[in-house]
Length: 218
Image (cartoon, rainbow, N blue to C red; front, top):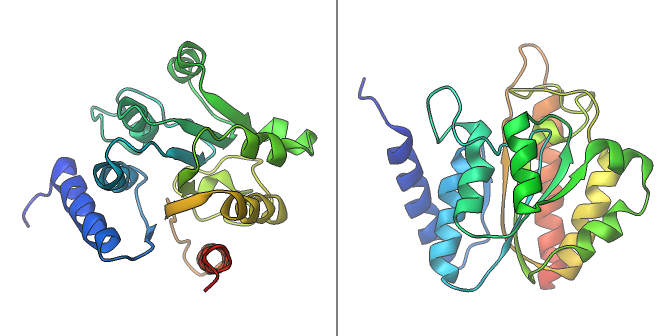
């Protein structure tokens, strides 16, 4: 079998997304390894050129390592690569980071809404929306950002996370107040003899389609 390198995968992903967006499609990409988001965001950056957009990440992890397991294209590095594209970012639901990531957050003054903060501060949605510096946003959702009792089938689950209504309230408000240019949902890892994770992920995609339809007046 021919070996496919990460850069080749990202190139194909970027080209595919570029074609879809240029054809007027609203893209909701589904994965898979979170590193795929790198190629997706590159496509939007190429299309929008110097017009900035914010990448909003819902995730249990920072994904800010320079490299992991010998690769700079690992899922643990995806947001680091996006920051290197000089795009503003907002991280939501974070509850597992290493020292390297904590140092980068401090050094770059990154905007992070940690899971514990979300659980005890009911105004987090208003503050998160107010912190978005651009009208356009790209949304990347790692399913481990959600409470694992709702979606246990992910690659690297963590206790805690966003509950269903907190998540969907935030998303609906985001689509109402900002132009969401595209989305992805990543890191689904099905569990044998269980469909709860797949069903909830599909329901979330259905919600995203509905929010976009409302925002566009379809």
